[in-house]
Length: 73
Image 1 (cartoon, one colour):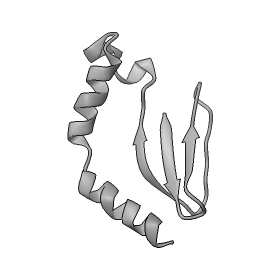
Image 2: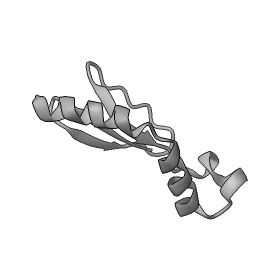
Image 3: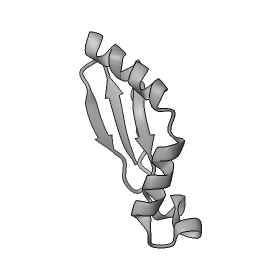
Image 4: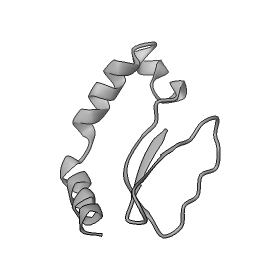
């Protein structure tokens, strides 16, 4: 899973192997889970197809609003 967090300063975090990742006082910009458990039943080994489908479900207007807040910090 990758998490982008903003405002103190923008940070890209990668979580592996069920690591507990806690960041206080921040708001995630966008998260995606690309560990096999997240896509294998429906997509088998086609991770790219899963990410493409996920991208169609993301509320990009919300992500854009969060990014605008980042740029204003």
